[in-house]
Amino acid sequence: MLVPPVPTPALQASSHTEPPLVRILILRAREEVVLAQPGRAYHARSADRESWLWGPLRLTAQAGDRSWQVGAFRGTAAADLAARRLEEALGPDVESSVAEAPDGLLRVRARWRGAEPADPAAVLAGIGFAGAFAVPSSGALRIEGATGGAIDNIAGEVVLETEDDWPVEVDGRRYHGRLRVRAAGDEVLVINQLNLESYLKGVVPAEMGPTQFPQLDALKAQAVAARTYAIAHLADAEAEGYDLCATPACQVYAGADAQHPLSDRAVDETAGLIAAYEGVPIDAMYTSTCGGHTEDAALLFSGRAQPYLRGVPCAWERPLELVGSGEPQSFHGESEFRAHLAMRALGLSETAEPQQLVERVAGMCGGRRAAVGLQPSPDELAGALLAAGGLDGATALVDGRGAAGLAELADLFGIPLEVPDADPPPYGWRLRAALAVLELQGALRRDDGEAVPHPDGVGIFPRTAPTSEPLAQPLPLYRRWSPVWSRVPALRVLPGTALERYRLGGQLLALVVVQSGGGGQADRRSAWRSWSRDRTW
Image (cartoon, rainbow, N blue to C red; front, side, top):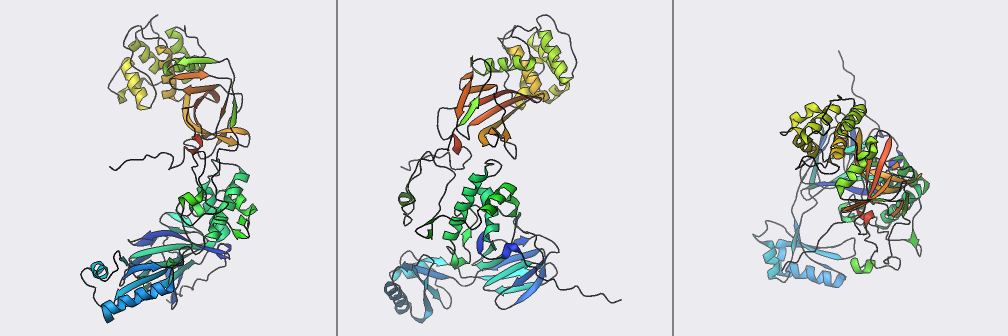
């Protein structure tokens, strides 16, 4: 029986590879790089050959002979003089070269035609070139497919394209467009080449998350800045075959997986729009952290001074107005505040009897209504509250029993509750013990977040949530300025201010604004917000 041959795949046109194009370095690796999509067809094309390979593909690089850079010069006369000195001092054993770098400097390099001496740097220093350093050659690339096909010993670049328009997976991330791969010494460089607008759809959500900043105009501003930066820095790394990197050293590019409908819309609605100064795209540097005032670029980046890169105040455009409900109150310490919170959650006063606490917790949690004495011991009350919450078996997780067991169990989940050192316990302990059981059982939920602008006014961005949520005002509003908690009628806060939220079912029980007295709340998410200066002497 004859098996028909597998038809040769055909490349399809894609909007992701239409001009204008940009080349982004997405991976630099000395180890083997695997494009792990089994059975996927890749069209591999180099300067002198092309073929179809089937995934997964394995990419490796082998370094060739290296050269030694002895200097970089502004003028051709100085560069030519250095090259002649090399040839005169070392003779025919060494080949010199002069090449222009992207920054306009002329690099002068030496390469031994045969075996290198034991210490090439010392030899070069001996003839007046101290500080010479090794530069790997372009190296040789090998690409091996799953079915035995391979492209080997490639000194230049290989373009990889798939037969379909689906993203390509590289190092756990997916990317639109094509890949350009090359060897740089013993390193494999993987470069994603794609349409500029497609690229921006992987930049804008990575630099300004649309879930944290769900404001279309803000995302449009970020899109214009990112597009301008990309255009102004095209060919910055031409010597290695790419335009920009994918890290904060250029601007963050997270590929197709980062795309979001709102940031996609911001890119589409600003398509082709850039910021220019005197007809030239500006150097659109931006940062996640401003510290209240930016600095003149001339003081930070040599050679990048521009009239438009001046330091300016950089506070958020407007504070957020939070409106509270209820009468002002103060609570000295967390214990007093949590006792107050328990009274609100349970609908009881500070003089509530222990039996009332147990019955109210049982009614809210569905546990057993255990009877307790008129003034039970802390151990007896703790056991009854755990039973009321349906948690009496949970103390098997801890060593202690009674009040100690409840406190230890609470501590496991980050709930503040101490073991009372007296009987009767201190003011509010019974209320706080009941509150701890509500939290352990899940009836009372506490989470952390940050204040953010929201289309409905003010929102909270919970620490563990993918998007922000609106806050319906007026709020049960509190302020924590340690060690004092206060119920307040109103607060004005900056976006990024830390919030604690307590919810009982669908009811917001308390929103606590955490204030420390310092500024820069909006910088809290930046990796560069906390730093220190250390003396080394």
